[in-house]
Length: 107
Image (cartoon, rainbow, N blue to C red; front, side, top):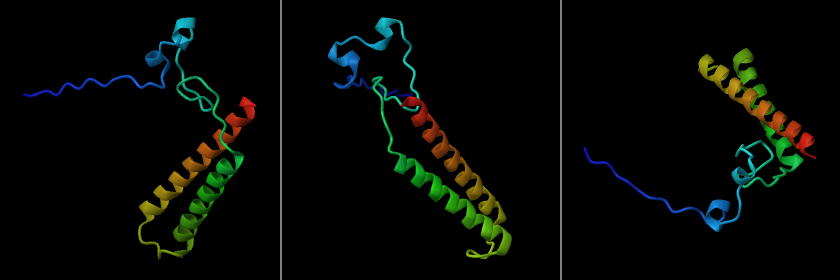
């Protein structure tokens, strides 16, 4: 059996590559939360992006709920797919809602 071994050089933007101290040097664990990038800096997502995701996911849920209930607009082709897309829309709505909450707590 042949095994490939590839050595990937460190990225120049990471603290380990530049020689600057990392959070681990100060006794902090490297954890990634919703409002931090891997370097530990705050990342702020515009509220419009979160609201857009919330609205689009709501429209997806309504569209496939209408197809499941009335057969419009897709003619109730597959009940399984209707339910699956509704669940995916609800998951996307939850992610948008939790991002809004994380941004409120970060400010």
